[in-house]
Amino acid sequence: MRPKTLFAAVAMICLAGMTSCNEEYSDNTTKNEQQPVAVLFHANIAGIQTKATDTDWAQGDAIGICALNHGSLTPANFNAKYETESGDLYFAPATDDDAIYYSTNADEKLDFVAYYPYRKPSSAPDGPATSDQPTTLTWNTEDQSNLPQIDLMAAKANNATNGYNREYSDVALAFNHLLSKVVLNVTLADNVGTVGSFNVTIKQINCIQTFDILQGKLVGEPVSMTDVAFHDNSTSTTKSYEAILIPQQYSGDVEFEVTDKTLNPSPTFTWQIQKLDLLPGNEYRYNITITRKGVSATATINPWVTGSTGTGTATN
Image (cartoon, rainbow, N blue to C red; front, top):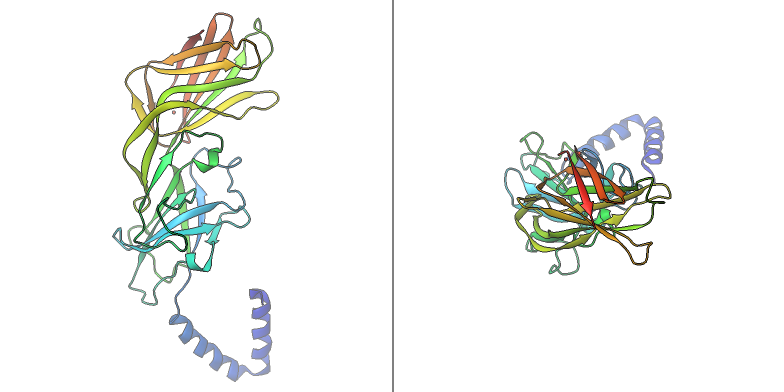
């Protein structure tokens, strides 16, 4: 039965025999206090969004959750998979094996660490996650074809350092972006022609870092220098290209390439930024104008929270 149907049925029984119903309720209350309580989660995303479409969770989005013994990094449940069935804020266990329960002892409290998107360590065996599995993931942003699947976010909840017990069946999670987002909007000057279709690449950037599941943060240094092609997020009227990148700092020049792939041969324009600090949770937005002499640009940084401001010129 659905909960509303069950409630109605119990009410009718109580009307038929108030004394026996009260006795039954008293017995059930005692039994319920001796049963573990399942934990459900509702999750918000802080700042300007990159994931999925617009600012919402998508149907079937999955997060990984660790229930930690309060005040420690010792997992009571490790990397449990929770999903939102309809794309709303509420997440429930993907399978019965993923369900997290509080102890019947109210003094035994939990903290929670969660991340999106859910992944299983590559060396982990099939079946439910266990605490003896690897506790880190290798996060690679080289492939930008599916932005939501690399848009790493994390949330931590410890009930203002008090921990959670069976009194808290619904736990709020506030997710923050751990990576950086770069957006290039491309237009052509009036004397150049119509807007074509472009390939946008950032040259020689680190694209791999380690994510610690239990701590909910990136650890170590970013590695694996390579060229990264931006995701084409253009429409019929605008040309926009996006990349989600590992946070890192450059003391030297950072080079972008913009290639018009509609022309043959395809001209390539280069544009350099003298210094670029990619900070976690920041969006760096550049408006690029291609002229006959090259490329001019203006820049804003917003919290994704949006990221610095500046101007630049690219030439071929």
